[in-house]
Picture 1 (spheres, rainbow, N blue to C red):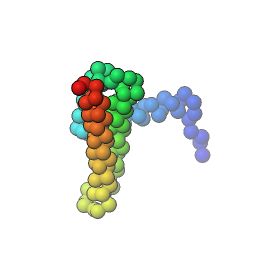
Picture 2 (cartoon, rainbow, N blue to C red):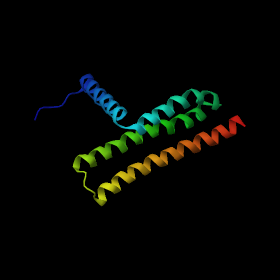
Picture 3 (cartoon, rainbow, N blue to C red):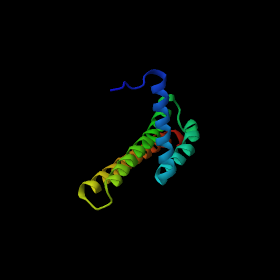
Picture 4 (cartoon, one colour):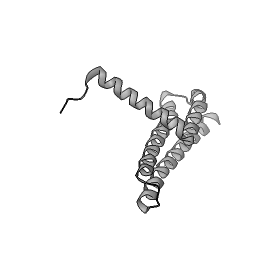
Length: 122
């Protein structure tokens, strides 16, 4: 077996694959585009809401986590769809669980913004 790439070549390949994944999600998933838009709106606002670096991180981290979870949810959905489009309990369950993870991330984001924003803007 031929050994894999290492060092800088591996890093370049990994970065290229990651960029392809982000691009594919952007092109094919409306939810991902909406969540990126949310990040782009809230990121500048976060500098006015947060009163410390810790608060800023508590505002931004859930937004970035939301993008990560949406990427993983989209990956699960694509794998399930690749296997087949016929209805199956396990396929539906996998998609529902991915969707639930996104919902929990959205709730966490809302709670973080509400609690810090309420305290600092009141």
